[in-house]
Image 1 (cartoon, rainbow, N blue to C red):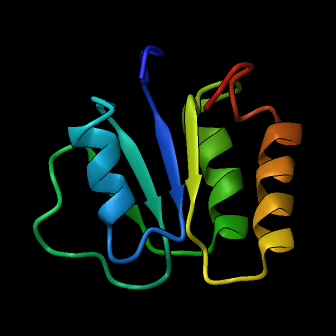
Image 2 (tube, rainbow, N blue to C red):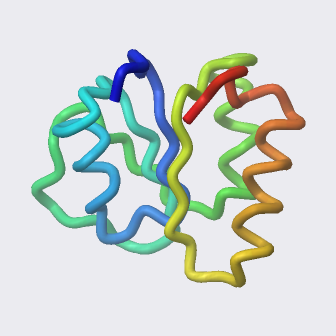
Length: 102
């Protein structure tokens, strides 16, 4: 990956595999792992578990991190693909996801 990442969202993060990849392989220093379920106990530093749904997390992410703060978005939510895409579009429309995010 050539883009420098500062903050990523892993929607549907449990058990944490994508969060770990974002830190270890994409060198993202901070990952918001959003999932009401439990995460693996041995995730790397920089992974913050938001134990809630993505719908509940988006306002918190916007308030705490601001507009354009999310550089990468991965989703492995246990839902219909259309719902996963809808949540990404809602996040983009809210301004949380940066232009050019991956």
